[in-house]
Amino acid sequence: MRIRLYESLIELLLIIGVGIPLIFGFVLDTWRTILTIAIVLVWLLYIVTHKPRKSASSRFLNFYLCGFTGIVICEIIKAATIYNYSDYEIFYALRQYSWLLLSIPLYYEMIKKNGLDRYLNIIANITVTSLIIRAFTWFCKNYLGFTVFYNLLYEYGNSWGRDGKQRLDATALIGVIIPILYYMFRKYRKRKYLGMLVFVFLYLIFVSQTRTLLLGAMACMIAMILFERRSSTKKLIIQLSFLAVIIIAINMGAVDFLIDKMNLSVNDGSIGYRQYEFAYFSSLIFPDKWKTGLGIITTLNTAGRRLVYGNLDTQMYLDDLGVFECFLQFGLFSLFLYGTLMSYIGYVIVKCNREKAYTYTLYLTGQFFYIALVSLPLNLFGIQRIFSVPIILAITCTIHNHLIEMEMGNNL
Image 1 (cartoon, rainbow, N blue to C red):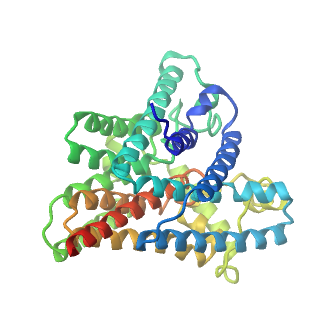
Image 2 (cartoon, rainbow, N blue to C red; image 1 turned 60 degrees about the horizontal axis):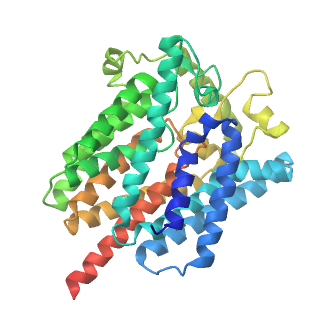
């Protein structure tokens, strides 16, 4: 049997990225460091052994990664100067941003013949496997009274619970596999993908109990169902506008009643504390530091920890700030990070519609609206979710590359 080296390496990176190795020991932070080193090594190996192909999609990927890297370097230099970071603290602050390098080998593997659907299937299988292990761990602790896979169960510490029950995260790739599973189900009509999709929603409702993720999943599904059949760009724009109204309504609290009926009650204390955090961090950046932000902050550093914890009088979390976390650290550069990515996805969606590549539109539409909704309260570039960004980049660029090949074929 021929061994596919890079496919195996990418599978290993995905397994680490969704937290499966936590069942074998070591804490989450250690695995994040291992993931960082592994991604950099695979990226270096790939660029040494492969000659990149030039196309509009690869040019965008290189442009985005170069812009992203430049912004990160500027912000880490600024932070290291202001907060006096050590070399290790600089590495620690940069870890999550280096994960975007995974998009290079993943993209060039995906554009190979039948590579896209093969890797989508791999991503879905690995992520759902992680969720099954997490669900088993959750059930054993909350209903059988004993602990298995301690480091997985307490991935974010023993305080990450609700209503007296320990919760488990849905992994960074939860927002990627929902559109993948529906795309694969509609394309291949295999019931296993529908079953996996139902399981993911049950996980979000009972195990993760994260309101925003559930709403994002619902928006993703509504978008894909609405846009499954369309005949014109005009109709696409009308439907996009309609869904935008739904998203605005969701973020204004229009579905709180629905969430309450699902026993996912909104904790007023939690919301109130987030408002307190937002007010505190806003005072740090306004009125004179909003253009370039505060720099990349790490709580490993004493000055950074004092900044985040409000002079150590209370514990606060950057992750609670959602998209404002990105703005707090990067200032107006966050417009490039989010705006360029979302604009590109939107551009490829319209291009798919024009080429009548509706199965691709199906996936991208769901992905677009998941990001649009979830990124408001949960920062896409935060350490808990940034692992999904190279996956989204690689998939979107691969679809764009396929559209270019379709155009070239039609012009022959």
